[in-house]
Image (tube, rainbow, N blue to C red; front, side):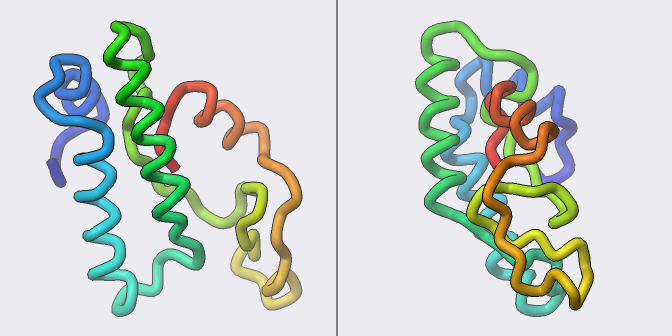
Length: 115
């Protein structure tokens, strides 16, 4: 799964060879294992990710969904995400928690991606 493309993962999800929950848990475990060393993520919202993954699996079970439905993505904290720190790597914004989602985050959400 680690080296699969988005298209390959999307095809696996559509064929029900893997679930979005399984895929999300795989990547969440990797993030939790490596983040203490890499410090790449300032926010990890496992509950939200798994909730989105379950919703994606339910949608895919109906035969609906698009190429990003159920695909876990990571985002930089330059994109406002409601309730998450959005620091843009700046000390000035170190404590800024966004009250809204940026347009790109809204679009990923509409597409069924797992953030």
